[in-house]
Length: 357
Image (cartoon, rainbow, N blue to C red; front, side):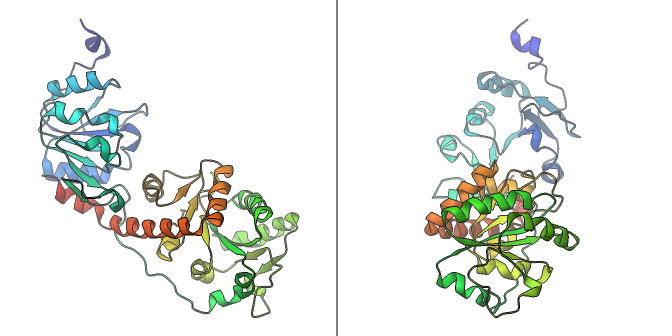
C-alpha cells in the first residue's frame, strides 16, 4: 500500500469521479455557494477538491486535495474530471491544469504569470491584470456579490466649509461610518498623523445613538472638535482638529471633500456595521481598510485586487495613511484603479457563468 492509500488520497468517491471539478480553498466555500449552485445548474455534476485546513460542510461531493502538487496532479488522473475550474488560489496550483488534460478555467486568477504556457481560460476579477493576455477575459469577482452601484450624493456647497484647511495645505482624513469601539482605534492613528503633518479628522459614527457617548468619550483626547450640527460659521476654523458628524445625510456628501478615507467597520472586531468602500471609491477617494471584518466579500475582493490599502494592524493603517500624505499621486492612481475595479464587479456572477462552457 502506498502513501497515497494511507492518506486516503487515492480513494476517489464515485460522485467525484467524472464531474466538473472545482478546486477551491475550503475557507471560501461558504461565500462561494451562489457561484457553485449556478455552476451546477449549468454544468450538471459538480464536485469540489478542497485545499486548506478549514473544516468543510459542503452539499457537493468533495475530496481533499494533497498539499504536494505532484501528488495532487496524479490524483487528477484518478478523478478524470470533464472540466477543471480553479477558484482563486495561487500560481502553485497551475500544474493541475495540464495534469487534468481537460478544458480548464481559472476564476479570479491573480497570479497570471503562473498561467502563461498552460491551456486555461483566465476569468479575471481585476481589469488591471488583462494586459493583452491570451485566453483572458475580465469578468469581475463572482464572490463579491455586487449587482448594482448606488447613485452618489453630490453637494457642491459642502466642501466650501473646509476652505481654511485647504488654504493652509492641511489634509483631511475621513474615518467614515465607524462602529463600536472603532473610535478608540481612530483617535490614536489620527494623533500620530498630525504629529507627522497637520490635518483634520472627519469622524462619523455609523449609528446615531452612539454619537453622543462617542463625543463625550472623545473629550479625553483634548482635540479641538466642532460638531457638524453646531457649526455656527461659514467655515471650519483652521485650528479645528476633529469635525464630528452626527447626521446621516452629510456622511456621504463629505467624501468628496477629503484626501483619503478609512472605512469604518474594519478597525475593530466589535463593530457590527458593514464596511462601505463603495461610496468613497465612487467619489474618487483612496480607501484604507483595517484588520477587522476583512471576510466581507467585497472588502476581501478589493484587498486582493489592491483596490484598497489593507492594514493588518493599526500600525499598518497609519503607515498607509502617511504614505497617502507623502504621495498624493499614488492616491490618485489608487482611486482610479479602484473605480475601474469596482465597475467590473457589477454582475460578475452571471458573466462568469456565461464564460464557462
